[in-house]
Amino acid sequence: MSSFWINAGILAACVIPYDKLGDKSKKESTQVQIGIGTGANGKDVNAGGSVPHVALWDENGNRIGQYRGSANGHYEPGTANEVVVEHTQNGGKKASPHYLSLVAFEHDAICVSMISVSGNGVNWGWTGDLAKMCGGDWYPSSYIVGDGTSTPSCMWIDADHTNQINAAGFSLHMPDFAATDGRRAQLSENLDTNCKSAPRMTFWYDMLPDDVIPFFNPPLEYTDDGADKDPKRVITREIKLFPSDPPTRKHSRDLTKRNANMKPEHLVVSDLPSHSAKEVCEDPRSLGWDFVSTVEGTYCDISAREWWYLCSDKLPNGCFDLEKQEMRGNVPGHKRLQGRDILSGREFPVKSYKTADKWTVPSQMGRSP
Image (cartoon, rainbow, N blue to C red; front, side, top):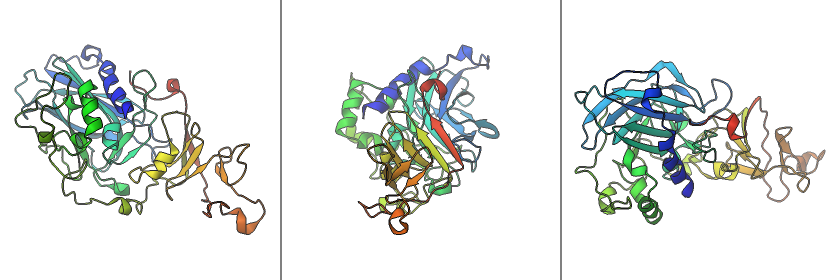
């Protein structure tokens, strides 16, 4: 559980100072940085997409300003993208960006790894791991945060819900993801204070750029170490992450039936120690491509939700041959046993990969500044 707190805590140091941005406007504004998960090679199989809509509110729920997304701009996978939100809806006054909403532009899915906001003397951050733990649609990412050791998962949003992506957008109460001792302890004891709080974090099935989000009214109070003074007040719903009755709310058993593989002929191979092919296969909310963890020594067939060991000297058969990118049979030449695992009785998946993406050392990956 510590990794997502490390990620969130590092984000403040990753924010680019406003005076270093290309926009030299003297108007009051807030900087928003959006990290996109590294997807796959090729424009039709990556985690990037059109520039999303962004809106900000202050502590009392007064809208500060909005940034309109666009299909003309494009966020590449594995990149940190800066958006400047001018304070055009509060009379141009200084304000702290306590609340944020991010909405996918039309029908172009993106996978968001991190968000940071900076303005009026505050720096707050959020990572996809904080939503993954609550049941959001996710995929591993090689997007690097901070010192190169943190690779937060990315969270999918899509307005037309392709591949049964649940959310068109999400809203966040940005101060609540700070890596304080009190926040860590509270979340360890009661995950519902993060996952079942509508004002704190909600992924919305139907969400438009001008929608008004939930707020804490009156504003929250915190202990000296950053925990909620009244945790019971924070919990506002029975369902994790999503509204109480989302139109497409699914049980875990239903999610196993959806097509989780966005492109069956593509493979992602990761050398990063934070990634697990077992986890990708075993979590019904993961969504993306077949996945290999070389550190773990496993391969995930995300379509079947089954993982296999990689072939090695100790395991020469009944395994995934990474070099050939195919399963290796138990008894070569034996038609009946070639396609089935002797120990488990499982049939070997038949794959034909046309493209592959390799995630290696941080210096070669997308990372925050």
